[in-house]
Length: 297
Image (cartoon, rainbow, N blue to C red; front, side, top):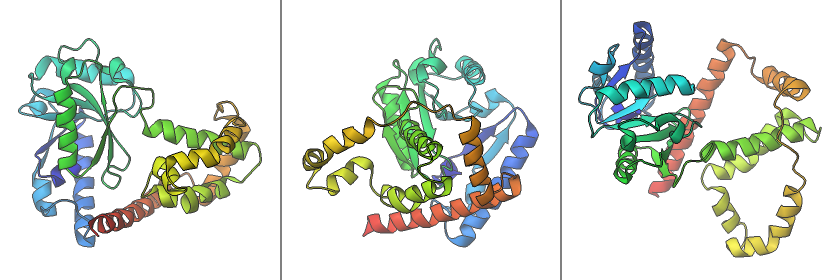
C-alpha cells in the first residue's frame, strides 16, 4: 500500500494463492476506507493505486523487471536465507534485495550471496502505513550506492528512513524499545507500579513528547542545552541507572500478572485485539495528520 501510494507498480508474491487473494481483499477494503475518511496516502485515487498492485505465485515472474524487492516473510532466519538464495539465482546486477527483518543481522542473512553488494535491510515499523520510520541497515559488503538508493526510495514514498552506519543486534528501534520493556517489566515485577499505571506513564507522559521529539532533543530542551543537562543530571542519571536489575526472563509470575492486567483491558482474542488495533490505527492517523500540519506551519 505504501509503495502503491507512491505511484509504483507492485507485485505481491506468495506460494499460496489464497494468501494473495486475501491480501488484495484487505488492501481494497483498507484503501476505500482511507479514501472515504480522507487519509489515503499519495495523490492517486484508491482505484488507481489498486490498479498498480498485482499478484503472482511464480517467484521468477514476480521479480521480472523489478528495481526493488522487499522480503516480508516470518522472522525465521532459515526461511529468509532460502528466499534470498532463490532470488540470488534469478535477479540481475541492478535490483536492490531488501529484507523487512526486525532484528536478524544482514551478515547472517546475506553473506555468501553472489549479489551481496545489492542486499540491505529496510526495517519498517508496524503498522508501516501509519508509522513512517524505516531503519536502513547495510551488510558489511553492501555497496554504498544501494544504501543511498534505498534511502531515496523510502523518502519518495513518504516514509522516514534512517541509516545505520553498521549492523547491531536489534538495530536501533528495538534496542530502545527493549530497554523500555525491560525496565517496565522490572518495575511491575518489583511491585513498584501496576501494569496499567505503567502504560499510563508512557502514553500520558514520555510518549506525549516522544511523538514529536526524541530523547536527545528532550534532554536538550529540558535544560539550557545538552551540556547543561549533563551538568545538572549526570550524577542522578548514573545513580538511577546503577539500580537497574538484570535482564528479565519475561516468563513466570510476572508474565502472568502483566498478561492478566492487559487481558482485562483488552481480552486476548482476535475480535477484541482486532478492534483495539483499529482504534490504535485511528489514533495514529490522527497523530500523523497533526504532525504533518505542524511541520507545514
